[in-house]
Image (cartoon, rainbow, N blue to C red):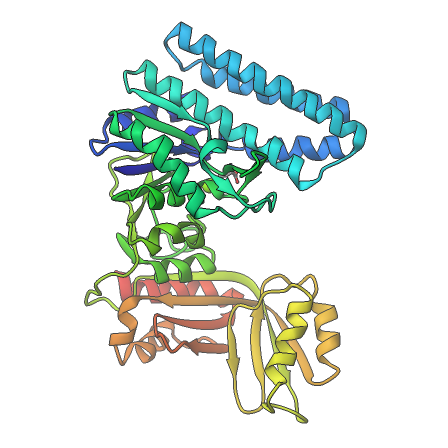
Length: 448
Ligand code: ASP
Ligand code: MG
């Protein structure tokens, strides 16, 4: 059994849904389908919830009407008239109900998380219904599964945690028999419900998480994430036009790359699959012939030390030096406590005997942070820097890698350099204006 997850761009319009049908029909190993909302629909739903919360009842109702029309238009791809009528009725019920909820919330000017989830869930409930009917009308025996019946979660609305034991029990009872009967279950991602049946969502981008949970609970042999790019690339294609597809990644490599901006998929969302050793494959629904990127818990290393180079522009370095209590125990704790207090995450950290340097990319709270740090340390800040992160399982086995990397980069001023004990990545901080050239030289030296 394979789980096929289609993201928003892979169900965005009639053409995308037709490609989905081809992909599902061409899957020989019993597919389970998980779908996102139509591309952009979740943003629209949360937008109209905000309109309602601001008391703009007319605006919110108008947005509901637009979104309803878009769904009816996309449902036009269902060739069988009876099936299409059925879906149109389902859409009408969903959107009429949505209009009522939105009307009430406009009066109350309420946008509590619980209602945001009820509203956002409409996207996946509708897209999964449309996809079920399209598949059926093309002779694929699809069966709609209400995600609220199988994905059991906590009541942490807008970021609900799946309750794995309950979810596994429901999926085994309700979804496994559908697959066993030779049919194709279609489930809306992102959506769940509490044990009491109140609608929840797993958080933005949650459909990948749903797919991983479904795959893990049903012991799938593979989870396929169908998106609109060929997979993970060796470098940011906006900077390196010759970036190549990375065919295979370990979970750790994928995490390092995602951290520095390769935003194809957030690795934490596939943890349930990785924990069960189920391979996750990223594939392009616009280019189904491409082989994609395979992410596995671990992977055999090849002769190549480097797997990919991630980068992040416009970061700020903060240098913190204390003459008084530097490296005295408790210093780092106190220092990071200041960042914690201001909910600001720190990316790269290096320390020396006299200073600690770190990078942040969200600088909104930095003035307050600097002020507080200044109570016990000398603090300087430098903007317009960039992070380059060379990632590869093969780095650990290549003793001369760092020196070769630095040589490849050429004479660039380096502000920070870090290599963690795991030696799967080397991180370099340099002036942002030097990034494109340095990245191009690294790419040329190691990939071309
Ligand atoms: N539709 C949801 C979102 O846009 C979930 C997903 O697509 O993964 O965040
Ligand atoms: Mg997505």
